[in-house]
Length: 334
Ligand code: BTN
Image (cartoon, rainbow, N blue to C red; front, side, top):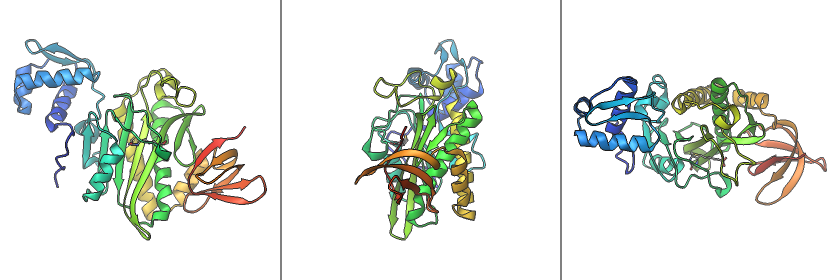
């Protein structure tokens, strides 16, 4: 089944151009050769090269001399991502945008149109990136990872929070492997480094009371941002700010999706235990953390007391009663 012709998705020939340049990094290739190999005119090659440059891809040269990549491009183009996802369900159908409103919005529409399990939507920039509780997700061009995976899990809707946790764990594992940092996970969806937010997950669902049609798991990660906007700098950070290094987003996405697939497969085969155990093992928020909980109905202070089998958070309130948090903001209470 071929990909749907969605308005705004990256032309497959731009994908081919990037792959050609990546495979010949440091070598000068003539505009005529590129044009011939990907089946477009030389002026189209030039136009696309200009577009890539505007995105920060370092291409030297011009139509007369030929073109040369200064390094392998870090664009989340399907063909480049698929190299790290050869055996993975997430490598089969990847929709790439240079710019879109929200990868969750696109994936939700695709889910309604019957796209299969494993479809991935990824963007270099979002103009209306959304976070939980109708917040905006800062989606700076080519600095971060903005991706959504479409899942069709054989499970009741009540277990959906476990998929958010699986995605958080997958992002944490990928970040740990690549950076050596050990991010914390704040229930249910925040990836924290040094107490500041470096990533978040927004899970949305299309379901009946007893059956999930599809779930979309949107993942945002702050990767190569050199600074966060003033209004976020106290509470948000990026991998680059924390380490002083830049990271390949292509490599990070491939690792993240491989981990997500592995958590997902274990969940389907063995149930929630592996995800719950791992989350409790790596999150300082699962047990014994003093927290302030703000839900749509109320705010209260208490101490976290583990997770329900469905992934909901147990909190022992200061009056001794146990609350089960279904959704809401969790903040450390100092
Ligand atoms: C949060 O922490 O509030 C969740 C943030 C989720 C952001 C990601 S970026 C990719 C996907 N598309 C969106 O519009 N949102 C999610």
